Image (cartoon, rainbow over all chains, first blue to last red; front, side, top):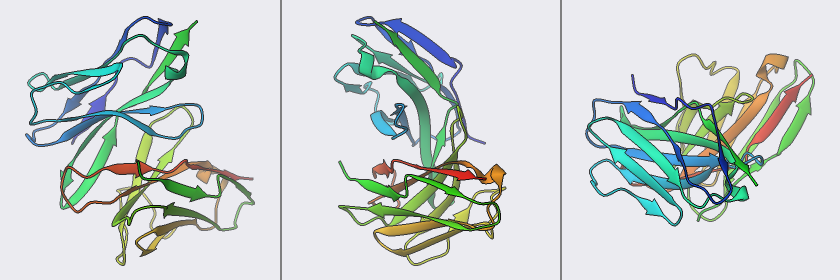
Length: 116
Length: 118
């Protein structure tokens, strides 16, 4: 079974500092996508960043970047220059084709608090 | 990005009644829609996948007779919780995609519906 593990239930960081959220996953597949989603208090799921497994280069979106270690099955999210608006639940997710259907599998989530 | 809406955003119903939640893709045609359930302080759990014009595929452990899913058009899917009970109280989120069965499509999420069964 494919599983996604986020070992940090809660994290906090000082505003303007950098924080890294961890995620590991279990798969035997070679072709898949990985995602980080943000869920603020409004509970609207927002895509933060995505990584294609076949790409060696780590994805970057402004202040958000990932450290994708395929062999180690690790996919961490780094948030630089943290802002108050970054406070939210962050979910790591893995997507692949299963029996002809695309499915997203989410980790347990990490609650990020930004301290002013 | 594409927009997915849900209606209602919050519904309260009495135990034993049925409630319908709508999910609409506003500016794209959604070939596939997904329904998730999220309990407080927990992650999203996939309940079912629906393709337009065909029956939904339910995840293991999800009662298909209790959670009726209809995907009659490329822009609308509905989730009906039948004979609701307090344990059905939860946050329900729909998601839609606009691509075919490849890995590169994008999946968009609705804002969710809070269901409270009294």
